[in-house]
Each structure stands twice: as structure tokens, then as C-alpha cells.
Image (tube, rainbow, N blue to C red; front, side, top):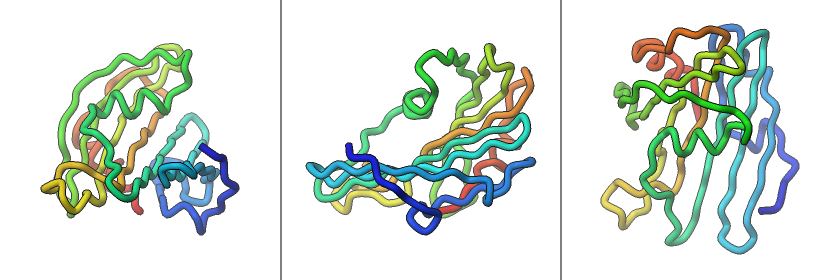
Amino acid sequence: MTVQSVTAKDVPIHFAYGTIKDADARYSGAESGWSGFTVRRASYRAGDEFATFDLLRSIGDYVFPRRSTSTYVGELLKKDMKAEWGRTGELFGSARPTEFQSFLLPDARATCVGLQRPLADHPDSGGNLPQLLLIGFYCRAGTDPIEAEEARQIAGAVHT
């Protein structure tokens, strides 16, 4: 993957929740010259809240495999960050369902929710192998797990 310099114009991810504002975003990106795979990242930090969202895009016959939200989100966390995974579920209410999984980061004393939303599927996949996938997480100080209703509000605050 080749790291790319990107701006808000290149990263179509918008998020505002709690004290985090969309204007707080820091952007990064990378692309594979071999496969055409791209990743666009928006990271946020405000007070005791932080969030990271990646927009993953593949082309041609490449797709993203069905994986748990904890697997995708776990890859976004720092390697030394220990997560305690909790409740998982699916949120409806938009054109595309969003899978969520609550988790705690005990060392950071943070409560979090991970999100996974397929945005576009490979045309030959029957609607279950995405080529455009939004993954990410939101965390804030606390030790009580984020419940499904709040996960719905957080998922609704992420737009592409």
C-alpha cells in the first residue's frame, strides 16, 4: 500500500457525535497499485472521545469477505490495545443495515462501539460481498457498555 496525502475533499466520511465535530477530522489514505484497493480514513478526537472510520474500496473482482465487526475493528486498534468485546447486533433504518459490536478498552477506561456498513456490493455477489465498506469505531470515557439504542444514534451520525 502506498500512503497518499488526502484532504476532506478526498475522504467522503462525515461524523459528528457527542463533543466530536466533523471539522475535528484528520484524514489519511492509501492505495494499492497492484489491486486498486483504496482506504480513506477520518480520525477524530475531542476531549475524552475519539473515533476512527475507514472507507474501504475494491475494484474488479476483488471483494471484502464477510467478517465479524470485531475482526475489522480490531485491525484498526493499536496492537497493544486490549479490547473486551461485548454485545453484537444489526441496526436497520437506513438503505443499508449496519452491524455493531460494543466493546471496552479497559486500559484506556473507555467504552466503545464498532460499526460495519457495506455500501456497495459486487454486481455478481447476490448482494452479500461488498466492494465498498465503511468500518470504524467511536469511544468515550466510561466503563458501562454502549447499548443498542445509542449505537443506533452513533451509526446515524456517520455519513458517506
